[in-house]
Length: 306
Ligand code: CDT
Image (cartoon, rainbow, N blue to C red; front, side, top):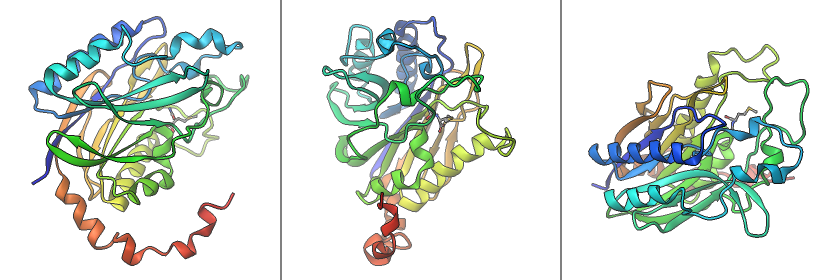
């Protein structure tokens, strides 16, 4: 069997005043725990190195530069790469990327134990708004701080823990869009890694989205995405209260039947682990979701029309 031990390394809150050293120290401890529990892949959240800074407005974007990484590894992130090497663990890391020519993306990388980047993804579905919104109590300025990702939804066949695995990534809001999943499903993705920072309160709910539906919607989309595309997912939250603003946590690992195999129960740093038999992806893809046999793209034209 092609078996892989997966871990979601949920992070508790990172306060605005806390530096990367604090986050990285906590992440290294989670890697240590992952090693003790036999994990071969560890998935950290979206924007894992800092607080969820798009809630804070900066008039002049250059004043926000300190939230972005210009190189990986850097002095501050090197301990993560060292831990991966020491324990033989591949990891997924979400971070804010500023490129040498000044482009800004909400990015994730999948790194092998040698420290080589096997896959990079830049977030496509950026929620929120670009300008300061005086009506909102909390800002969600992803459209200010990031450009729309320019890499599509790539899937690569990567060597992971002795197996060749089709891996792909999405970031946070992407999980709510069936297109993100299907574009990867069409590339026979077996493992989707995703990180998220999702506020417990939706500032735009207009009285129609009850508080208790927030976690339901997150799980609903991830479980449906896995089932409909016959893949596993590791979905890792940043959780808890950052400077008074609550993120709901509830990280999960899901199998191709859409079942939750493991779920975080705290709002802090927490490692959850599940063993994935990648052979399980075969059932869906050879029967009900055999795309070659049953998909009808000729009826789907509207999906890609502008
Ligand atoms: N980080 C992120 O994408 N969060 C969004 C919240 C959207 S509220 C403007 C999410 O979809 O979870």
